[in-house]
Amino acid sequence: MSNTPSPLAQVAPQFLLLSVLAIGGVNAVTPEIQRQVVDLRHWMSAREFSELFAVAQATPGPNMLIATVVGWRVAGVLGAVVATLCMCGPSSLIVYVVTRAWDRFKGRPWRQIVQDGMAPVVVGLIASSGWILAKGADAGWKTAVLTAGGALLVWRTRLNPLWALGVAAALGVAGVV
Amino acid sequence: MDSPTPSARTPTPPSPLEGEGALHPEPVRPSPTELDLFLGFLSASVRGFGGVFVMGRRMLVEERQWLTPEEFVELLGVCQFLPGANIVNLSVAVGQRFRGWKGSLAALAGILGMPAALSVVLAALFLKYAAIPQVAHAMGAVAAAAAGLVIGAALKMAEPIFRKDWVLGVPVAVMTLGLAAVLRWPLPAVLLTMALTGSAIAWVRRTR
Image (cartoon, rainbow over all chains, first blue to last red; front, side):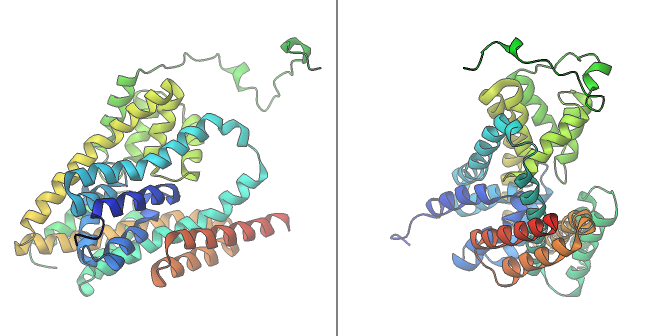
């Protein structure tokens, strides 16, 4: 391990790049984060990644805490800070610049075309995120039912998504799942 | 030579469609300070269980009235189009609008600080007690449900997009899913391929 760069030195540039690519939010780059930390670098199992994602999801706050939690898991508190800043920095800079100049883009036809073309891409990326997380958490039909239940709750009801996590936790503690 | 005087242009009367300003007197513009921005976004972030988005809107439009509902939708449209979490982008944009880069930093610190710290505490607690069977079972179950939440969010997003133009939407979304989740292509390759494919189809559909 002594010759390879520290996990933090590997994560930071990765997150800087993903920040710029996170069109549709950090959920859209979650498949790539998982690919990096689970498939390529083997820092954690797919199951642990799905569990850390659940921790991030259960924490009140923006849907980007998976980056914070992954940074913490691979490099401690400093890792959490660096990962958060790297994930938010470049995208925030872009937002800052673009919102200052936004009026100039208004009404340009290419903007609408790119927006229309990207919308289903974002849907596909977020679906990928759910798919990969579900595979990581999969432990038989009972967990599949929980995944389906969570999906239905968000899709078909206006209930707070935290209910799904609470019910799942209770079933888990009770030994049902 | 262009005349620099603005009076050289004839003032255009407001069109009846856009004449909102004529109907409503200009409201007093809010002017939150950096501290206001920090505290406002902090209050939204800690109440935002299951995503801050709803709380963010409530704080910005209803409670503090820093944005009108129309301004909120417009700014959100910009933020969704750009990379990054919507609510984080919104905090940068709102901060910028009122206080420039200092405002952006203050709003960012408000929206991120507390949740990031909390998430680390929760993750540490989870790993500490992960050996207890009940905790392990609970987390496994919660992870499965959390994955479902993301799938549900994708379905919810897909509905209006597919309804608007399914010939564009369905193949592009399915192809993206195949490349990212099944073939596990690196994200830059997925984005480049699918942004070009999606935009090309959108362009053809529009110019037909």
